Image 1: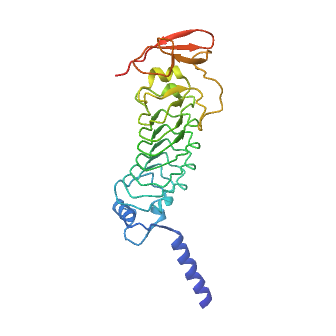
Image 2 (image 1 turned 60 degrees about the horizontal axis):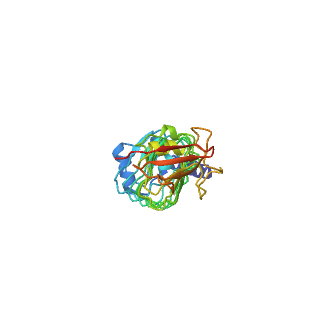
Image 3 (image 1 turned 180 degrees about the horizontal axis):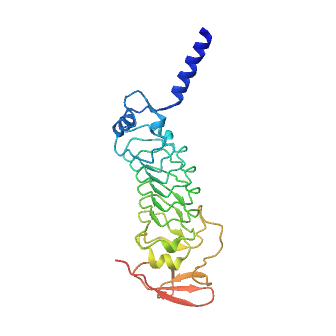
Length: 279
């Protein structure tokens, strides 16, 4: 009888423990208390109180450890910006669609299991790499003020806004079949002094619509660098012609320059003069 009672006690204790989510960061737990999801500072929260929460704002709360966010299994919107996070594990938050984590000293950011992600702001986090190849629903990306050298967005076929200024990019691929839905104010790539070629759907569309780039950066359907898609030639998808070179008005070969008349030469022998005016 005593053995049965002991086993019953252990089973109940284990069951109670399994119904709680571990929250080691006091500032994180204090936020949960303020939201009414928790009631006492004991490094845990009742899982049933958080597993159906859809959104949570944890902005500037001096949180250094977000262990326990995995218990928010229904979470679709998270803002944990301006904290002290060096790690952010969101592998269990598979419903996440909107993530803001800017202003944290992140060592890395893995969103490969967040396939529903539509909006991401990871600016000013110190990131040196960012893999978004599994986030095909991504529409909005801000990753400015980091140390990124490579950014391949060719799989992000819904992308309509990109701000990647002030990084260390040497290659940028936005050739995803959706460039025509990215307007003049929605593509911001300047302050990347080593970025000389941006891979795009159509160079002529990019030349005519995207002005927020560095003067040394040209557009091509194939930049032949580390994040290029396996394509040969420079095909302007607005026509069947291939853009083979750009000339200045004296006939010398050059790259794109704003506010300057340039001659675009195609493989069929035709050419046209284009001058994009920028303020």
